[in-house]
Image: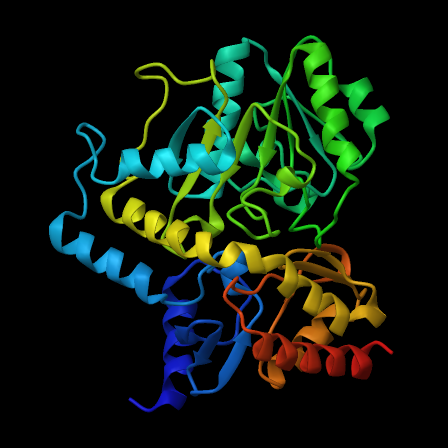
Length: 383
């Protein structure tokens, strides 16, 4: 089959057999490092990375090797038995988060669900506080604490009483948290909202309010974690210790995996939680290989972010490591299309915000090429 036929084939099958939940018009068929190729063979610098998923780049040799070697040994054995690599991976997650124990899931939404369940069962309380423009997943549980009305309201009632307050407003948090609040769930940087970075004092203030009211603090690091901001966790910039942390996206370089970790004294008892596939042998092998690569590249993430910031300074980007947001407005889709035409993949998040979350292995030369294209697109469409 010619390359030019691939996208058309994908589109035809998708139109006939797949529920139309996504808006898409191109096929990505191959990737290496920070580069991907579409069905026509065109090359792109990928500043989306599967939405902050491909942390070590596409098909990193160490991750591919770990997946293949484990797949030859054992693909699945269920959590009825001790699982190869699961304990090692849990140890690594505990070490990078500063928590006491971990539990694995298959996605960030499942990690959110697990954290919410743990908060309820250990506190005996029923209510949650979350934030406007926050995003925690699309399962019934995680959707209950996700603010976006278009995503949440069609599926109400959702069964978890949740009060939404303005992100960054500590006075509103104080008023919302009461003696029946199980937890406050918060993103240290709001990713789906367009890379909204609060003051460090915001997270510190939430910690103090939770302590006073006896509520737990759940920090959603699904998008911000695993080195994305230049530290293992974005909350580590504020030096806040939460009760529960959720992770996914960059944890296993694109292999489906999530996790949540909790402080000492917070854990599920036997039979309180479970999953057939979570923390399987191949996922944990991929996760361990990913962490090994990230340990080597993490010290350089902040510098790379500053390179993006300097190159796009005229647009006042919001930057924390390799998590970058630029307010564009209603013309954001046009900027995205212009970048696509010129070989750079970018993403429009909520409220007209351009979001850049490239692989953490992106090179200086690739950053400079991406900046040139993005600058040109913004200049052509917006200025």
